Image: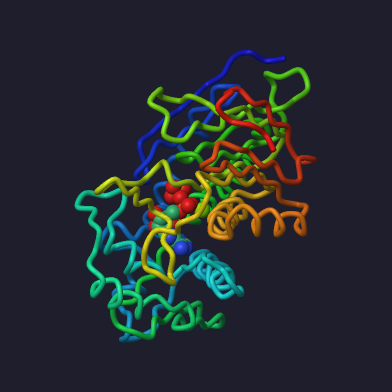
Length: 320
Ligand code: ADP
Ligand code: MG
């Protein structure tokens, strides 16, 4: 067993990114952070220019040809958005920018503003052309937002960068999107122990429990990371295309355990929107994915627990 860990941390993508290795390797560390920067430059919608912003700025005017990688991510995001009853919507951008949740200037918009933006978020109005790798948003004012999946996609690319550089044991953490590579050299059975944060805790990094996995991704979508409170009401950052308001249900968070971080990112958002009952049913039919649902009534539901182990650390929560 190895005891030395080398942890590298940088503030990026509006969050903290960290990489844990078990041998020092400056070349790989630099390559990893450079790769994350390059991918963020292509995918961000929080700066005036990126490949995605080129598409958004041409909305209602003309199609935009993008790189193969960006095209294929948008194509996947469109597929998920067009699934029946999907609350995942890659065209949600205008509403995200209206609410500004997690950014300076967040606000509860008035109903006219919401009605106005809701006419610009139909994923059917995204036209894709695979041959030319081009994307056209049919209405002026439409905006693609990859905020729910960009970190997952980037984490998977980083895992591949590590593999190509012969690193087979590591943890990549992109602000809560945790991707474990291989088996842990610290644990005698090779499990990585990943903390599941207690929502809204006043103690920094207080945990509900530990998730134990090998070579899996762990992604959580919840209402407690980016939100604001106004007139005793909590407004969080996962929005409901149907109402234009934050999705409202019985969940504090959903954690998805999967092979790739992109799947984890897609399904954590999607299952959050399904809610715990429909979400559990969905997972039971998709046994390659596992889930941990934290409910506001402090119960925990574990689904498909053959892909992970869970150790409860906090007695305010109960596994049901
Ligand atoms: P986090 O960014 O905290 O990891 P998520 O993966 O759940 O959380 O993604 C939330 C982000 O996704 C929002 O900040 C916004 O950019 C975008 N988003 C909000 N609502 C939706 C939605 N219904 N479908 C797809 N993306 C959304
Ligand atoms: Mg997500």
